[in-house]
Length: 375
Ligand SMILES: *Cc1c(COP(=O)(O)O)cnc(C)c1O
Image (cartoon, rainbow, N blue to C red; front, side, top):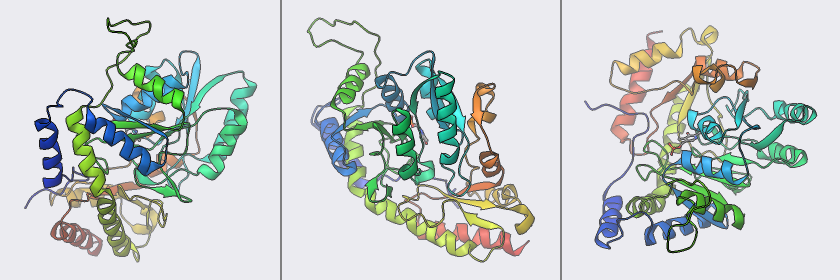
């Protein structure tokens, strides 16, 4: 019996053919025609004017923050419930992260906390480089409320859409909401280049600045002239080719993840004390299905289900450990309600990979069924 992973890469013959064609074309060096085409295809898909392919989502976040002027003496406002990369990118620039608690139903930044925080920071004369919402597990943040608040305060929004490629909100694509949006093509994401990312924007100047910083801040002259410190953050042509194949398959992969989410929803529908995180969001890409367990009502803790599944070689994971609880961010400013800590204690993410076979899906549901019966 092979192990069922949480969200493994879903690659096959199409990706193989694209990668092989890229190698045979001679464009093995970083950059090349597949990078250009990949950028154009993603900009078209998301509906932004520009796309800049990067070596990772973290690199794209770093570039986006640098491009809006983030640096020492400034703060970047972000949710506490996110992957470490969101905060790391801010710290790379010399800015300080300020962590905001989450909406308990979606896990996304709690917009009720945002407006008073921005007002307070303004009163205190603090310099806010950007507000950096994250579309948790493939569900867009509440942009109808968030965008006007940030616009009134005069702060740019950088959207961390690393987990939400293919998701929508009110008909708009994830990655298109801020001054810049950032995607990740890490191996566990909804679509992968094995490693890679993308910065999306309608702002020509921002796109040009990001491209320049990502290629060692090299001046456009033959003799390698540099007036600023740059980075080596661009995507390889071979990896962009894999991304183009994945993009052809994206809608099918999202459909499969939705199917898995619906099957889990059915399985847990009648189980007391269990709900799905962001249940019923019509625009979710269903990257990862997460259950939230109230042990007083269910009679069991998510860790007990996790142990039962692990014994059958089925991988699960808690939700992100909130940034304000991370030793590396001890002492960082945070506006808290306790919602993120509760989701960290009560959430469990279930196998959600689009490559999961019907047989493996059945095995997971059967194992969960056994656990529920034993309670
Ligand atoms: C994966 C992820 C990133 C980082 O992307 P990489 O491509 O792994 O660098 C950033 N933010 C969030 C929320 C992520 O889930």
